[in-house]
Amino acid sequence: MVAFASRKYAARSVPAFVANSTYIVTSFTLKGRLQNLYWKRDGCASCSGNSSFVCLNNQDSAIKMSHCKNRGGSVDCSLGIQLAFSGTDKHDSVF
Image (tube, rainbow, N blue to C red; front, side, top):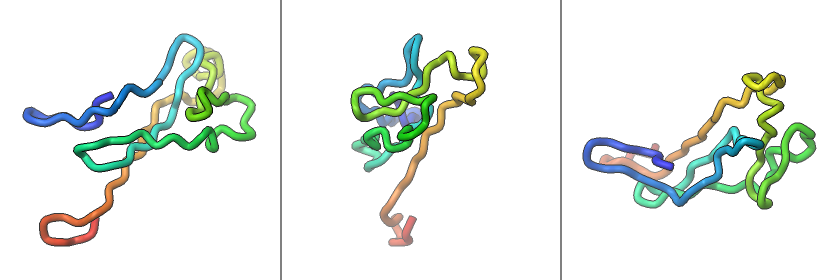
């Protein structure tokens, strides 16, 4: 997955499961430095107690494609990616 790309630079992560013909992961949280990006795994905390979701590999909450609105279901399966930065800029101002 490419998290940032420009003419000269690109930041890529190791492969992350997004979807197959049965399941789709609808939320990712990106964490780390621009040089080293990591996909934060929540251990399926976000799908706990929701019968529409399943936990894949004890690390990703996913929903069956048949539950998505574009497949006749009632859930909006739009992909959401959360991005957070921490640190300071060149003037030592906090992000």
